Image (tube, rainbow, N blue to C red; front, side):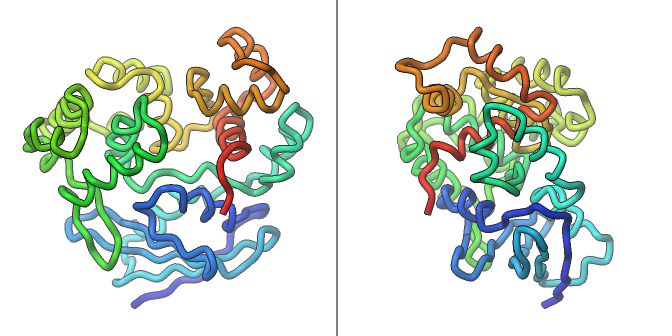
Length: 290
């Protein structure tokens, strides 16, 4: 077991990070001991353990790895996932001058943590489309438990080449709808057969990525925007059609109905260029805290 101690710029509230990660039952989170086990997708697949050793104002982390990180890929991966490079200070200050001031004070130091795999982000988003959160998690668990890999107590999503071989009827047996099953398999085939290259895609602009993804059957603007935010960490995404965003804005402004898209456009104008953070903190304002 190899260990490495890392310090990052404040503010960074890892306890709130763990709280949100714990909403997904596939994540192995220990809130009391302030740790999370992270699947690192590679030829052999590895599990990395991140433990908080500091505070919001003096954040530090102990990273545990099974083998030496000679090429630095594991540490670079964790820095990207947990947004450890840069600082949240300027973003926080920006929102203190907006209508989101109180929400940002309550959740100060919460970064936009990425999903652990770009491919997993796509699969999770497709499965979650138009489902309540509880059943969405149940369906995702069924998919990963049947077709993924369990290593050291951590679940890894199946690879695109593996999902591409699944029959629609198999997913229907897990209570996938016909279309959702077709979407999961179809998008996986696009990746497995090289027509959709996720590595090359990340080099493109937000607009180009959105345009490329929505060409695929089963990927609309909501899924594409979630991919930009939670697979690539793009900072200025605001999915206006998201029900959670709409409910959070309804609560924030004391409305008796959900705001229209035109109203949302006006409300969110002052939150650019950090709309992804506005999205995250609005979601946080209505999520159940543990």
